[in-house]
Image (cartoon, rainbow, N blue to C red; front, side):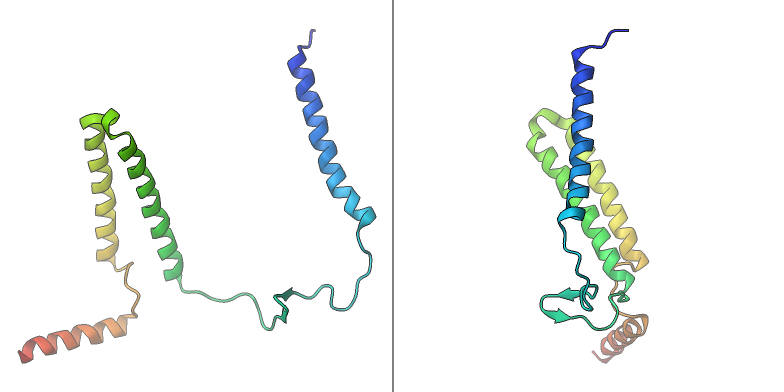
Length: 139
């Protein structure tokens, strides 16, 4: 069985990577500090000792907004790529982008009708709707 020079260079590369990783993991053990004081294991940030738990409960609305941002940000990337190559894409590219935007707008309308974009609690929305209906009856 013959080995080509490409395989030897791959073997040298893999040995080099494994050796570098071992070096980076083992040298700090030999050179690192070994003093463990009372405060060494405590969390410390910006000169202030933390108090309480770092586990805060956030509303799912924050995650929804983040996901909507990512979805529509990716949409902007696709549209930018299409705009750069609009001449090369021609009419077929315009039709595809129109279908793409239509699907995204249908998703946005669906989310809007579902109430996923509403931040106010249900009771506040009911009060606001009631106030609008009352004010409409006055005029």
